[in-house]
Length: 126
Image 1: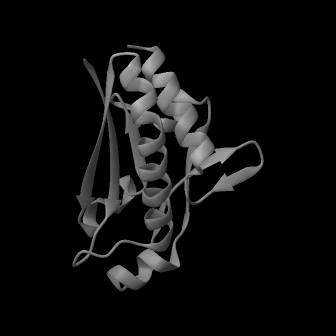
Image 2: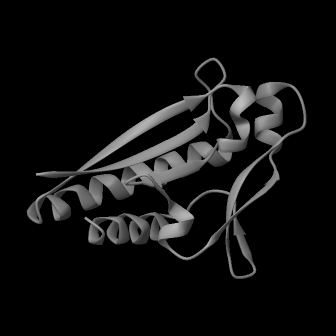
């Protein structure tokens, strides 16, 4: 089987992450669980890796890579940043973390549909 690695990077402070990253993580786990058996039939082993980041790497928080490619590149979207009060609570200072912009909409948490499209596009590249 060919492996397709999905990597999720997010801020972690004493085992806790921010609300938006937590929602992205839940969506990501649900999509991986749904797509893993479908891709296995095609000879692709879907592997989820979670990378916890320290506060000094917050700029990379809420980042998802599929086969080493950022999710926004796989779906023709752009990464952005916005203030994240939840991250600020964790690190004790105002801060911002990654979002994905789709048209005029900015998604703080990555929706399941976007994640699924990116994974399927990543699988097509194998």
